[in-house]
Length: 351
Ligand SMILES: NC(=O)c1ccc[n+]([C@@H]2O[C@H](COP(=O)([O-])OP(=O)(O)OC[C@H]3O[C@@H](n4cnc5c(N)ncnc54)[C@H](O)[C@@H]3O)[C@@H](O)[C@H]2O)c1
Image (cartoon, rainbow, N blue to C red):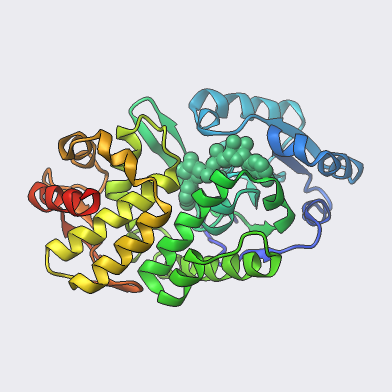
């Protein structure tokens, strides 16, 4: 019963994506594969072998523009016209945007059908395909409408990463760095030094990052008790930078800057010592596009941070760290972020 029982199993590495997807349909349960048009183009054999196995394939444009109410409505019609029913299983094959759209569509179509996640970007493998959050954007903001609807299974086929542009790899790597910073210093260093051309190293990186996210999700599957706040480390400021840049920065690029600034705030507020802060700042700014910040004043970014979902009584909150791998506070892990601290942190990171 997909709506009530979240599957908290770790994703599975599979040797053949299409064989795995086809094997999920049995008896009355027909599989409807919604594939990113880009992925379908880059891996033409995928749709062919799915169709040969009796899976209905629907190609869908991805990116943030697919996470809209209009796109969801069109997808529902496409699924119903293709013969989907309450027993059907939706297989979402794409990056985080397509997974969010398909998961939310599965949550509401016929009051809920099952779905499986087949992530094709690094970010989706280590983050968006786990934890049950699904949703779309509205004109007023990102991910404003959605539902918890866990995929029944998540399958990782690593060859998808071979066609991923370098900028998208870095985008995903930022979330691995985040997992390390909130939970495990070794994973932090592993992410900073990852060799994404070496298949063994990529597999270890993905598996370790997934374990960290899933351990946190298991403590708080429906984001009710505060444990999951940790996963938002760097995101209060990161989302604000992303919005202030008019989405010219990829999410991961903005989160790297957000993490550097939230580490600076931890230092300014006295939660983290100077040595730990300087080390993390140096590591993060080596790969972040810090020069982007020069185009903003602290007030430009603060305007967006002050509207963050985690604000209480008009003040945004952030997740302070003691150092790499150690949060400063037990759950709910949060501290208020004052404009004064933010202004000083901005100066420390850009100076
Ligand atoms: N539900 C969650 O828990 C969760 C967590 C983190 C992020 N997200 C969401 O994920 C989205 C970001 O995901 P994303 O970074 O994967 O973005 P994305 O889905 O837009 O994919 C990025 C780009 O990579 C392309 N692409 C996908 N697979 C490819 C491949 N194998 N080879 C070459 N190109 C490929 C896509 O066409 C797209 O242009 C955001 O909307 C974010 O809100 C959700």
